[in-house]
Image 1: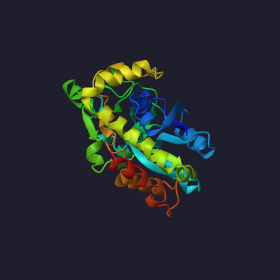
Image 2 (image 1 turned 60 degrees about the horizontal axis):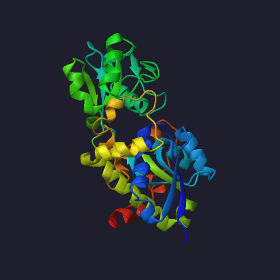
Image 3 (image 1 turned 180 degrees about the vertical axis):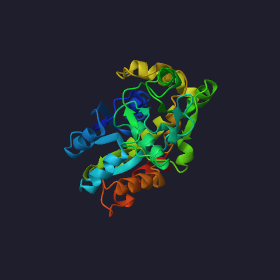
Image 4 (image 1 turned 90 degrees about the vertical axis):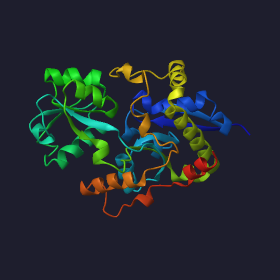
Length: 310
């Protein structure tokens, strides 16, 4: 019997979202499971959910969990089977002279893209400070990468007065005199299930062993990425692949460990507590019904089997 073929896609255009399957292919992890994996990108999370529903792809490797919850609430046959970003190691940095989040009333908060994690996290911080994201602050999209080198000039020029940055650059901002207004790991000590691996229930039922194999290969790739000693080889894999740095990327972020790699779970598990936080937010915003529960969308048995067999 020939290899099982899986059509896999990321929704997001960021290179980082496709590194794990690229590593798994290059290292032979998928081949050792009898899998041929085709990696694509749909362009947005909504398009990923739609492509999954239409059977145009088999697995989404980075589906934004609010999109998944909303699809499930509509009755779609969608399940989360593994984690990708189980927390967000980020900080909200302010311009010089900004002393607190409340000082941002009437000010501009930068985002990388209009509807990405930066908006989600910034809105959460603003609301906890007693401000309304829709009205009390102004969000400005397309303000570059989440690095010190990209953000500091925009704060200095007055283009924006605050921006979510990767926590890895906290000391750089402090030394330059920019205040850290919020630490997301303090706001969310139990994590926050931002993105997850998703598939249709009908696909899972027909391909149980192959799905476990795919997750086993993914876990091996995650662990490879999380080992700093493998960084040069990972970069060589990226450079040999068809992956490209996006135009707004600060390529210096890849010189050492990429700042979001610590947020990847080494066992590809789903952070159920972090997912419940997002579900509660979706219910409060009335984007999903009050009756939706986490156990209706999570199928952890595949990743548990994959992790146990390693």
